[in-house]
Length: 150
Image (cartoon, rainbow, N blue to C red; front, side, top):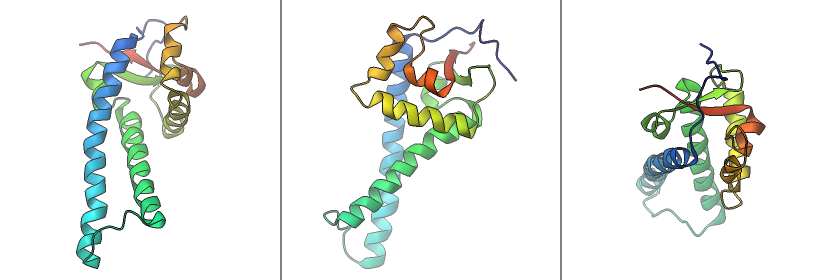
């Protein structure tokens, strides 16, 4: 199902920001569960608390949490084009041609968003000056959020 991009209404800055914060709240909970799924079995199997001061253990935990974040976004974007925050704020992610987002598009978007948002959210502020209200990571990944009806 392709969406007519010319007629699709782009979301405003505050709506996108609200969906982002909503997703971050949900993601925080998911990360807490992922952390517990590492720490509790470690404690149970070894009989000792997780040695967070050892670099290799810290690296392992960070890799688990990074993978959790990647899987969170990829799952929702590829499955239906909406994270839970996007659904609450009536946004859907599509490719520039209006088609659904595939794994490659979602990975590109996540990569560009990470790089563009890292310097104090500058990648999101880009949309305030863009004629189509797109962020730099929208343009670079060739994806965009659009408003959905009701």
